Each structure stands twice: as C-alpha cells, then as structure tokens.
Length: 296
Image 1 (tube, rainbow, N blue to C red):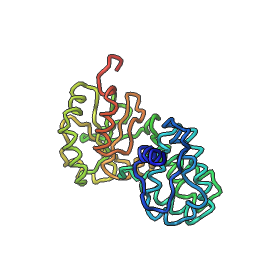
Image 2: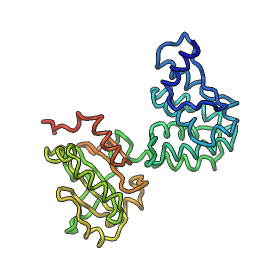
Image 3: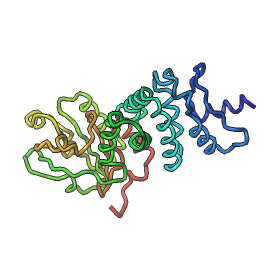
Image 4: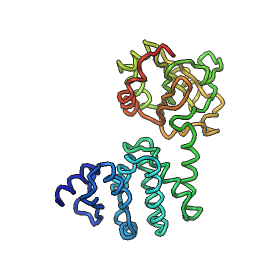
C-alpha cells in the first residue's frame, strides 16, 4: 500500500526529491479523491522542522513542488495554505528571506518557465499580512503594487504614442477583437527574432488576415531615429512613446523586451508579460477566441 500511495504522490507532484531529508506528507489511504489528496498535501507540506532546515531552501525545488500543489486549488484553499506557510516562515527571518528570494526568481520573473503571477501574488499578500518586519515586506509590497496593474481580466492601462508620421494615437483608439501588444526595442536581437517568428506563424497570420487580430508594436525606451529606421512587418501598427510615460509612470511592468500582452476587444488583459512561446501556448489552449464572431 505504501508503494501505491507513493506513486499517487509522484503523480500529483512530479518533481519529487528522492534522497533528501524533506519528507513529503502522505495522505491517508482513506482519501481517494485526487483533489482532496492535493489539498491534504498542500495543508501538511510544511511544518516547524522543515521550515527550520535551511538546506530545504538552498534551491527552489521544494517551492516549485509547493507551487504545483497551490495552483491546483481554488482561491480560498490556496490562500489559506499560503498564509499558514508564510506564518511558519516568519518565525525564521533568514528562511523567509530565502523564500522571498526564490519566489521572486521562479514565480515573478517573466523569463522563468515557472512564471506564475497568481501563486506569487497569493504568497506575497501573505507576507504583507504577516508579522514580518517592514524591511522584509519592501519587495513584496513593490511587486504586488506592480502586479495589480494590467492584471488578467482587468482593463489595460491606456497610453499615447506617435506613428512614423508623428501623428498621436492612443491604445484605446484601436478597434479589434484581439490586440497583440508588443513592447520592443529596435536594437533588441530577441525582439527581431520574435518579429520573425510571429510573421512566420501561420495561425497568427490567419488571425490577422481574418481581421480577428491586430498587432501593435510599441517602443518605450529607444532613440526615435533608431525606431524610425527599423523596418517592422507591413501589417503591424507601430508606435513610439515620445513622452516616456510607460516607463516613467510605470504603466506596465515591463521586465524584459520583448514583452507581449494580449488584449480583448474591450482592452481587458488576457495574457501579460509573455514571450513568444507563452503566447503560442495561450492561443493553442484558447482556440475559441481566435475565430471571428459576428458580435465583433
């Protein structure tokens, strides 16, 4: 029976650390429902001993396993277990510092394969509501403030830009079922390769052809002469942030370039701080939004 239970745990939490001192919680045999097993593991994942062992936080692997559990739970459950975890961690200041460091790198950093704003926000809000000192709360407070801007399901911040004829436009002037907003820089090699990939993506190009999608490329931090010289794809709308308001007013949390956002017809955010691969994954998983509807 122990072998069966272990296999179930492996299936629930695939990044299992064999041979490490950390002991994964074993759900009772009486709990057969997978969702209840996940909830049990999340609730009992941490204890005083595991939090106190600094070896458990020399790398982020346990935190990744914990993230995997939390992301499968509903908001109420995930929030409760996140609060309990951070409450335990607050008793060990050095441990809490390590936890915040790793979470910042694996869940907040948009270049991380494990980027997960929902779970990161849960854990940072738990820190802000905890007994941690004000210094320990500085990074979480700054991160939460930025993440609330352009949150998934919320309206994107509006901004103005000029086109290559120096005519002024606004984000909300663009009418389209879907808008692919790409923050870029003409000197950015990754931006160039992303442009090419989007141009060679048949699915995206069909969306443009079917008038389901428009592409807006905004340069927020370059010399205007360099921007004017750069040759963007012909069917792209291009703009330059002449007033530098996107960065100066921190309208968007642009961690790296290119930074890709996908907005719906009402400019609500569907996808944020994405790269090309995450964009393709989103479009594949949400194929229904990529087809033209009469209501648009």
